[in-house]
Image 1: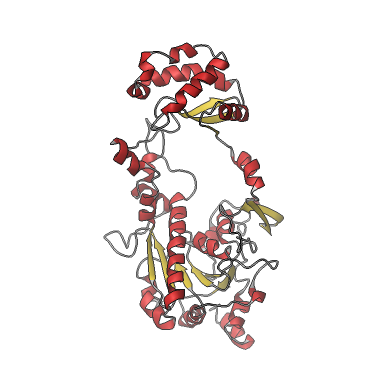
Image 2: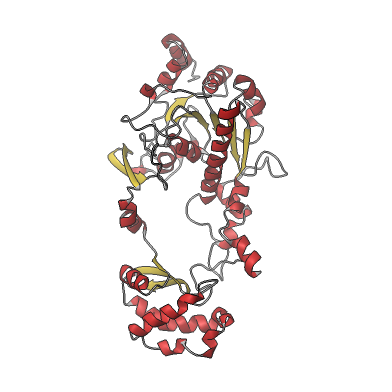
Length: 419
């Protein structure tokens, strides 16, 4: 089954067909789900953002560019390449328009509290009667079932209850929230993968399904290698805050910032000799303190004495050199090493530039805004930024006309405040 969308309805310049060309997605989500829709939009789907009259909650979320309340960075970042329609789904007339729209769609993404859409007559069972092939993806803090299902929660709550915050922070301090809405990001990405599977199944069978995404579960799935550490070493991961987890495994200060050294630790101790060879070549004072029988005992690497000895030797050396200089020297000596890039250095990364990672679009009151592209490349159906985040309701009339709603009916809906 396919949902062909007229090319005239697509924003921006004509582009190569995307992998999801012809798929229509209705985005009824807020902060917890708008990024999921964006991922579909930039793979070629026609993603229609349904907003209340006051606009999506993200439109009102700071920071604002130049302090302008219409220029929300979170809204822009999560809604590029979409179209916007205003529908006040608190009214039956607007819900009727939404049902017409859903007849043409492959996927609905929503993040209302469990039961809310059922109350409005827009629950999964209701929508199956409208479009049996429709996939409904619900992204909520704790999923549709369980004792926490009805609890409201923020990104911070999901990070905490998913276990992520227990790993973030300084070793001698309380848990600290990582930057950005990391729980929402995890929820959006897992939701996109699950939705793609369900849409593919619907294409093959004509039968839609309800994708129930719990952000807490997504966070628990993304605890890096905490579970594997317990399986392999019997250790429970803890907060390190950049300090040495074991000797030569952590963040160190250098002349222009910080670097990450991983010359020891689980499976990496073989690089220790390479680090010693490098330090000897540089004639670093005190390098002889890193040799002797104690350094042949792996358990010794986990002691504070070993960490402090290593730090006393390498810290003056690292502080005398820039991160890029150290990084390239470490490569030459085959020592696992990385510069800790600042945001500017990420933007200016030669690797990201060589892969054309960054994209540009008008928006936020500027002719060109640089935004992240896709971290993958499809050879035949490339990712594409179709345009900036839409103005509130910018495409309402166009979308209603596509549904066969006459100009007079559009005017009447507008007069009634339904659209």
